[in-house]
Image (cartoon, one colour):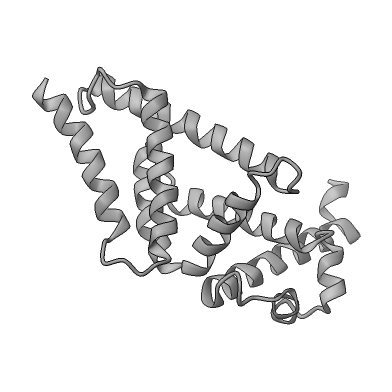
Length: 194
């Protein structure tokens, strides 16, 4: 119980407060238009005081992405990872700033030297596993084509989700959720046709 009191608990609470403020500011203004100074002001801190809790701007934004992932999991808590991803794709239309942050950071973190590289490696591996398991469950239930490779479908679902996020930043007339649903309908239709 010692960890629940004192300076450590206050630091955890302040860090959570900063992340809430950052999520709100970035969702509203976008990643490129958000400065660490604005996030700090929204959290009631100086820029240096805020960065003390994260170490760098990059680590702050990685923590924002982690917090976004946790919020999405809590918001769309279903045993079906595919259903969750579908809901997240639809939800992302309401948070374009966070989509911009995710798209930018995921591209930059492809460089193994980027401070968030391991976060994305772990994130993609976990999401891919969960989606492949959901594909297997749908195949067992007869609602997905049994000939489809679950790992390949999981990778394609992630690629579609990420690609739709990038495309949504160009104000295309296509609803990403509708495109995602269309692919799922095709996979389900192949199961019904076989």
